Length: 391
Ligand SMILES: Cc1ncc(COP(=O)(O)O)c(C=O)c1O
Image (cartoon, rainbow, N blue to C red; front, side):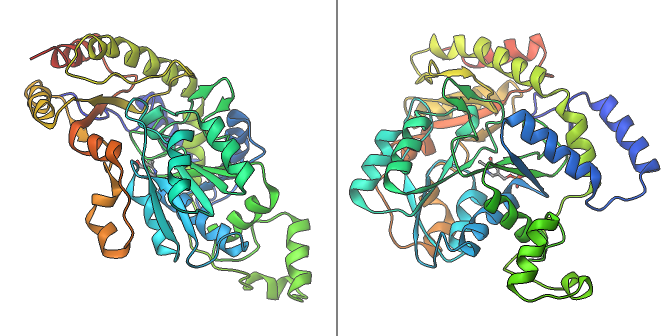
């Protein structure tokens, strides 16, 4: 069996040993200095001013939308565009927080929203914000998407949970927007078991995200930020401030275990990304040599930090054949994320306006993926390659 992911951590043994030692000696295990240090190191690594650690990527997504609402940048009923090919908890927060999702199609050969697809959507309807997903380590012309959003006053946020480390000549995936989320769930580029992060360069957004992350209070803000909120609401004492709740929030706090693991895993991230890219390029030779598949384009991507190996078959019948070839070879496989999100049961329950999205439909019926991670052996990669040979 070649599973989607073999280990919980990069360098599993060293990480578990260090974690056991940390737990035995740590004075405090709820959110504290390890989390703060991981935030600083992650922001530095990503090249952003600020990073806010969460207990999952999904809660980071919910917190971004809640923060935009708290800040008055989004109002009930506003339309928010999103990548139709994405993960459930990218789309669900839009619905949960009283906004109207507008599904946007992707390009077949990059799996991602392009400027062309965004313009096609804007010909049909208006959106106040775009929650773009960088899908499976790929991006399309995201810098052009950013330009369109800037020109038209559309708030851009990125779900970068699947693309930590991907780089174009215009910058890193996750750095094109007001804020971007990351996931550290097992099987992502680095793992803290469960965990998520939001990166931003915007001080006000970072401040609101910290309020939203913990109950709506000000305890995790800087002294200057605290005094601003306390003055505004006439909170006179530290005693009163302890239980003053300024705006809508959740408890999405990580633990010191999340912080410790994040810092520890960060040291292995670069070599993990390099190995993922090397594995992908090796396996891709077989995809490109087989005309049953549509090859993915990535000549605009300098570092391709793939999350998995996506395979796009030309017909649903071919997908059936290759799925059984993969299963027969003991390779664990998954659908192409949620396919066209509009076809998911929850979506139809809550959303009335559906859009014509031929490419997402195509990927829904013709796509699948298998894992890509540094522990893949030479034999695993050869098994992938033989399963991709023409039937
Ligand atoms: C695009 C995307 N967004 C959000 C998430 C949610 O992350 P988490 O599992 O950490 O909640 C995932 C999870 O795989 C994802 O792929």
